[in-house]
Amino acid sequence: MKQGLLTDRQKEVLRYRKKGLTQQQIAEIIHTSKANVCTIEKAALENISRARETLEFLYTLDAVHLCTLQSGLDLLKAPEIIYTEAEKKGLKVKYDTISLINRLRDANPERFRGRQVREDVEIYINKDGDLYFG
Amino acid sequence: MKQGLLTDRQKEVLRYRKKGLTQQQIAEIIHTSKANVCTIEKAALENISRARETLEFLYTLDAVHLCTLQSGLDLLKAPEIIYTEAEKKGLKVKYDTISLINRLRDANPERFRGRQVREDVEIYINKDGDLYFG
DNA sequence: GGGTGGTTAAGGAAAAGTGTTTAAATTTAC
DNA sequence: GTAAATTTAAACACTTTTCCTTAACCACCC
Image (cartoon, rainbow over all chains, first blue to last red; front, side, top):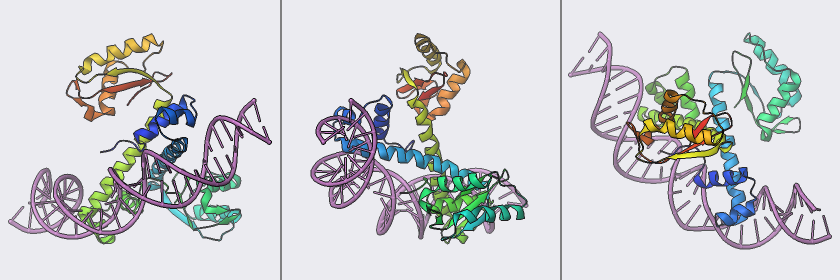
């Protein structure tokens, strides 16, 4: 039974990086190429992101489905849709228009291109008005 | 590039479970055996544990190595060793004797058998006196 | 005993992840 | 502008994970 997402190699690299070593220096220490150190470090950071996203998901379990932003939608029209749907459920969204748009884009950058939604985004809301995307 | 540790199947099961469905009911809905639902749920919970452990590791990056509890050591002797080493570094451990022992055992149950350390445990400490184990 | 909910083990096929190299491209720092 | 540092891509062998089935097992409760 594994513990943690990071491999020994990945932890090793992160520790050396924390100490301020360059990838080249680490490569020499662990006897491999600097390109490989780069790949390992990148994989490590990706794993950390995935760990965060996984725990994020747990919050969506306490949330209910609010609506779907359909592919092609103008991002600027999203807030009104969301506010309307939240009101129907008697819930108050925690974010104003600006921060709502920012949160949408920050949460899933690859899902938007400019002002346009690239693929369907499911919106969830909990009792506190927090929004989650799936 | 995947997001999150949980597969679609795992999320699906967790959502149904959150709603209070039994494994048997879920099995019928997603057209598989209840044994399989059990396995998927178990894997999901394991992944969530791994996500937590991964983020735990990040804290150890801000911590420095304090000492090693060697295999065979009596668990009750650990606090004194740890307090002594922390004092050498001018750091105050955040836990009293009792909670320190509990924290040691809770963090890595499989590493202890009764009062005995089964395999070496590395102890790390940060500026706040928080302890981490690796 | 029979029903319900949950867990475990063995085995298999498909999918995903890891470490690696090589080579090229890009960014950062002086 | 040059050198160093970092990033990316493609390909490979290898290991692990995932989902699935079947079958058995445990702990209740009536």
